[in-house]
Image (tube, rainbow, N blue to C red):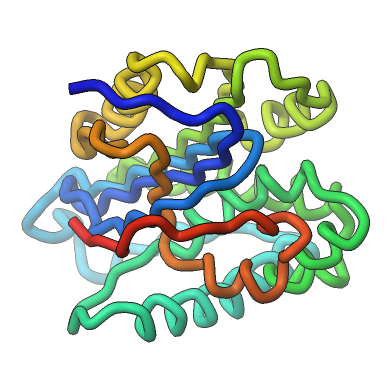
Amino acid sequence: MSGKLPEATILVCFASILCSKNHNIMKRYISLIIVFLVSVMTFSSCEENGPSGPADEEIPKITLNLKALEIIKADQAFGFELFREVYNLTEKDNIMISPLSVSYALGMTYNGAAGTTLDAFNDVLHFDDLTTREVNESYKDLMDQLVHLDEQVEFSIANSIWYRLGFEVLSEFIQTNKDYFDAEVKDIDFNDPQTVEIINQWIEDKTNDKIQDMLPHTRSIICAFPVILPILRMRILQLLSSLMVTAPSAWW
């Protein structure tokens, strides 16, 4: 069975994998605007039974400048807020989320914000004392270091932006996300039933087949997004003015 995406949609989707096992991912169904952003994070250990080296082996460290440290602190604050929202909206005893994945996805969206919408993003993500360039440079630096930090650990991040065929997107927005987030940017026909298949295949390829059929074929609007939505509904109304949850959340 095939599904199709509506003409005006934004979908934020990411996947995170730890030790070759895909994390639980919450799916939310929303109706919105413009683009589909995908941030895929793969994190797997080469050994399933623990480290092979001595216990006192030095742990690789990341070198951060002051602005990057501010990003880390901001992500920590945002992560606790996100976890609280997820916890309040689920009856599950055990919850696993990836605030960094959400932060990267929103970081790409952040580059398209201006005015009061940008102010709202800064408020939600705690970027008030940072410029857009400082945010982008810090994300890129952190991503580059995490990917090459430890030879015994496979860590990869893949980002993509999918926007409706025919929709005019500022070239600066596209180029910025390519430069700082290494994002693939593609225009695609959201009315084509094969679009869901194409996006699902991209996610599957980037997660080494660990995450399959991320976008179900029975819905026209899909968003895999750990519930940042309550925060966004309250504090980024300019961006999410047409937000409409159309199905209950689900974990898998």
